Image (cartoon, rainbow, N blue to C red; front, side):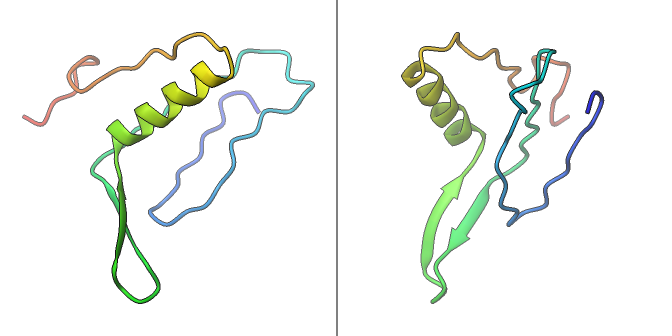
Amino acid sequence: MAGSYLYEPGGSVHTFFCPADNTEDTIALAWIEGAQVSFNEDGTFHSVFDAIANQYLTETATVAHGLAPIPYIRGGGAGINNG
């Protein structure tokens, strides 16, 4: 639905979906702060997923599907900083 948004707390599982009858562009904004550190059921370290990993995987998928590059706003690019 136009203007909708979704907040996903850590540990969320989801699938991004746009209906086939969607008639307008769909824009996704991912605001990533920090990293998701995952552990196996036995408590041992599994992986780290952060903004850089997300960017790499997204860019790899778009190339594999022959899509145009995805524009990114990087830290500070939108007037965002840690100061």
